[in-house]
Image (cartoon, rainbow, N blue to C red):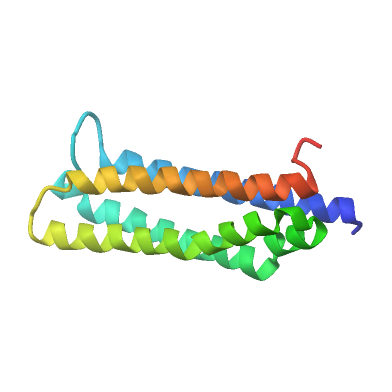
Length: 151
């Protein structure tokens, strides 16, 4: 495989992973507020928790692949001007997983106490926004070095 083909593999894989994560985030959001419900119905708590934990596993796998396959490292090696951004993006992995863990833990505790789960929806919306910004930053780094899927 030549460098151009390698580059396309990096970009295609990253874009596919981001689409898969986006679908998982959308599924969680939809399960959190069915219809016009302002908060997660207590009857849906187990379903939402299951989706959150599934998303967490997907993120762990996604971040592990990025770190082990070294697509961000490879981009930084090929184009040193992106190394700071690549490093910042890599460091966000721990922060994102930590925030998702806190959301899951809070939801478990509040559902056991039968407390309102309204703030969980808001926190997850914030998390989803941060995750999308993270994915966009990853994509910018990779595409600035390897090109886009359309190239």
